[in-house]
Image (cartoon, rainbow, N blue to C red; front, side, top):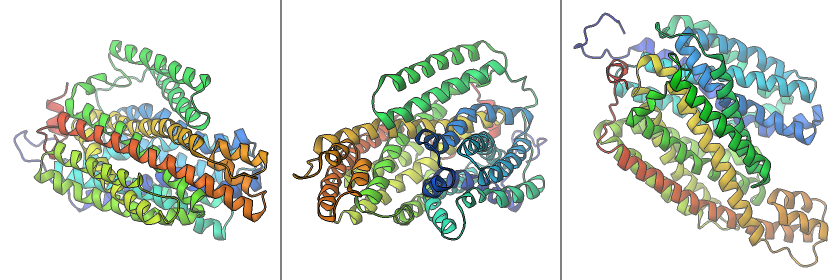
Length: 520
């Protein structure tokens, strides 16, 4: 990767050092996705040890994801300025320290603080790993394969979190789920200086602190408001929070246009492929987030599986996404990129349509098959869209591009959970028919949500409990069927975007040097 090569020289292909370096970068990626899903399984054990209030429990669950999303833009730009490997190593050290602190927290307040600090530290890892992949793999096809590996680790970690967490909790205390990251970070710190290149923008200016504050306020307000919508429905407070976040975001955008060295270079959005990829990621993740929410709920509340058993049922979908991500670069090399991504999204649409046919009795085969087909599409477009985002910008903007890719996924996921979750809940409430003779308190609870129905059934004799759960299960399945139809529509919209906005594009997106000559 010599910088002295003439412009007419062919792009040098990555060697064994770069591929081993990729394995190193895959470890923190796997860890981040594990951390986001493993805590759901540990929550009952954690509640016994720390006795958090209901509000504290919500913050323990959410603060990690909030602060990752909030700090992505800042950390992506910071890596472009001080060096991506340096930021990765600083972040790895912070993740290791805060993981130990979280594992040995002695109060709910302490765990909220340490989880928040862990989220800030983890926000350094995703943009740094993606941007470094762009620096290590200049050949477009090799970069596509490398990003496919990166995407596979992220998707696989999400599915394996409950399984790994279940094994740990079988033998150790709740804090053990946080210690997963410590050996990974130690290994990263040892080998990173030898295997990973350093890269930073030599011409970058100072970071504008006001822009940092504005970006945090905007992203955190929007994500928080969306999560509150998912939790409580369309109430005034979360809508006002989202509106406030959008207003602050408008101020942030206005300020970036005036700065000589903006925190976020808005000229990136003038690159058509870049904007199209972000749009596809956001819209398609909207469907994935909402679908994932109701599918996991069906497995646990309708079928009665434990979190670990539900996680095992989701392994086939994770495997399908990993295989699809690895095959995607080969297909994109031979066919127009828009066609490959569009067809993948249409395949996902077919999987969502299968969810429309799931019934509450014996619906597992159809549910799992549909979910597997959905994730064939997810693995394909996730890998190719991320590669397109990284490959279509100049090298010095790689960290910012990686951050925007991650934020697009986070926003789409949160929006999907909020909107589709509300839709599914509304269908549940309209569909449930509580059996005659059910105590009024249990009936009122069951009419609110499936979660409340499961809780209320625990206090009833076996026969009334079985009848109440059956009625709630039918109503929840109706919500799942509706979500499947809505997700199919979203997948069709995403496919249309890909087939039109990426029309004529090939899988070989510009490499770093080519992108720098075509910068906006």
